[in-house]
Image (tube, rainbow, N blue to C red; front, top):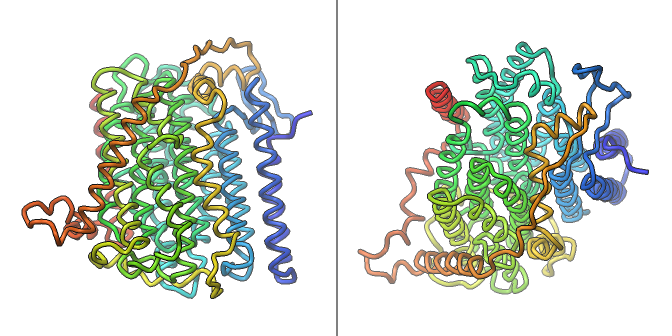
Length: 602
């Protein structure tokens, strides 16, 4: 007996409806308990489905509306290992976020718990759906809950402004996605992704290219890829800590998941006979995002904005891996996504501990105030090592698989980009470690973003950090390590990625046709020596850069760059203007450039 794939959507949705209906009469303890139980049950269901999907894709048709010939008449879910793994990550992070906020965080008259469960239901449905329109619907449901969660602290103006910017920019992305969907529906008369891919075949006329462009850019906005990334730091800097965990831990990555699903299932054969503009765009945009996100991460001094730009940088590396496109690259992408979700969530939870105890997210204000927090400092330091890709963190395994998935210049480019991204993001986190937890050097430049007036998320005045705050941070950080020791991790990820990018296999599963899965050769153990060397170089360079920034007044003036980069990036921070109109203009420019590439290379 196997659970219905609809349950991971239905359980949190029904729980959210119950809590929303009776929240006025339920004490906070009961609301928290029911939300945690629903998230835990969802996690069990997703793990169960993940285990079953390793043997065969699970296809579920609502109302038993099975395909008739080549016509898909019903709405279906398809559970494959990669999608199920991301659903497990979603449930895991939501559970930890609800535990973190148990009884302490101001929940907006108990709106917080229902919104978190709606967010979880949308993420689960997004990972499982085989229908393009429902892919759009689930992401918009996710976004609607995210807008409300971002602006949950309505007594402060900053969260409302951040939520507004978030909503405007992502609504533009939704418009692009819906336009591309409408064009494809007009061209094929279908909404099921397998049927769309089967009907399009190798067709690559202007109509198909336009639909592809709008669909891809719509989800790249949600994935915070440069130049579509501006909403992310604004949203992260003002959203509650548990919400930031879901934003950075998986919501951004799900935008890339959608791009990967669309390009492999719907447009898998479209570019087979012509130069592939998608691959070139993914490689260039991924590289640009990785570098720009890393540099901006080092230039920021608000802890949540530091971590937000770190997410942008790592998102760029994920897109670069998608541009490589091979089975091993996508396998490394999957490991990288899961490891990044664990490490980044741990860092956000740790930042939340600082906000709880020290009542600020500003690096200059927090200077030397974190000295008593020894265990919190240890988690923050481990998180920095994880971002740099130092073994035994699983991020190193993902980087190794992506880098060695190809040979020649792409391999060299991937290795260099991973180093750049790891060095700058880890250097920013280590700089915070040196200033806040060690009290070294000066307090750092005080830019405007570091002075965001953020009220504490709890009114508790405990001098001891509650276990419910520390435990989620520790679990996330050590999960990033434990993932490395999962038996046959590389082989399992290769099998999952091979099935995910197999367009014919997806079509065969939807239509219940016979299909022989391609064999997977055991890649053997990782190249531990190269992983240790790569991670060590990244950590050492990051530590040097961080120390150079902290002690730059003692460095001769001619040698202060790039240590003083953090204080010389005001022009770049001004681009992050906080005005949604500017962000929309940048998005339109990105669409125009990508469209030009599409039509030049067709």
